Image (cartoon, rainbow, N blue to C red; front, side, top):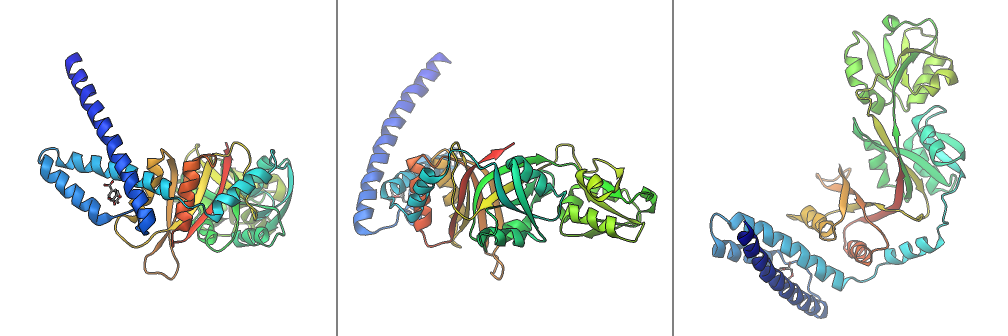
Length: 378
Ligand SMILES: C=C(O[C@@H]1C=C(C(=O)O)C=C[C@H]1O)C(=O)O
């Protein structure tokens, strides 16, 4: 074993020297490309190299060699792109935000939330701000609008749930509004079935709630016979509707805060599919604000309809050692199966290599939106 490890060490040393020589040559090519306006990526050239390498090495290692060389190409292109980076407007906007954002997140503000009092957005808002003035809007769109128009300084929106997945409606609206993410928060969510005093579980013929809550309580709802489930805009609104209804056969799935708020009684608590049920909320603002310690970045990208374009983008992050915490794709309405990609990354805007990468993404012709750099409260 000792001897074989020594053999590997000496092989690695030769590979390292050769890799260094290869990267230095790649940088010389980058200089040539800069002077002659040639793009960094050459798919044709990479295919030729892969073919040659496969032929030279033969079976059984050709597949492994292609894997290795694809990683070498990623590193080589990343190094060339970093060398060629032209600073974009975004680099300047990030610098300005870093200089101008206060050290501390505000403890009071006018904040837009969807729904009515007792909503989970309200709970998220009260964890983020000590003394918020909350303005409620009927729809998620109302929250985006209020922030874009400057009616509210901040807005709170649910974005994904650990059992039921992304809140598609919020992702779809993101493409239509100008906003930034300045904070996020992860809340443990418990759902409760509630009705007016006197209504028993066996009386219930119709249950109201938000689509996400209904999804998160799917297992419980399946156990009920002959009960209609009706989607409404918000869990707290469902509680309010039930409280104001003349009917005695209706119930709502809502937060426990709604029991007292709307004078309802608990029929069954914790009806969600898992005790570990979390929802992430984002806090949005019109201006870019980057508070100290921020290490999460969100981006929206469209990608060209060419082979391996998503792979190439992910490779750019991988080459910088960046952890991708979420990748969501949503169809672009009206297009022929074209998609918008939503990336969440763990990365720091203090890294010059990251700023170069963001500049590169911004300078390419496809849609690119830097949503913000923030911390997530857990
Ligand atoms: C080095 C070059 O740039 C890129 C990197 C390559 C490599 O590392 O072999 C090959 C093609 C290009 O995508 C080049 O164009 O030759």
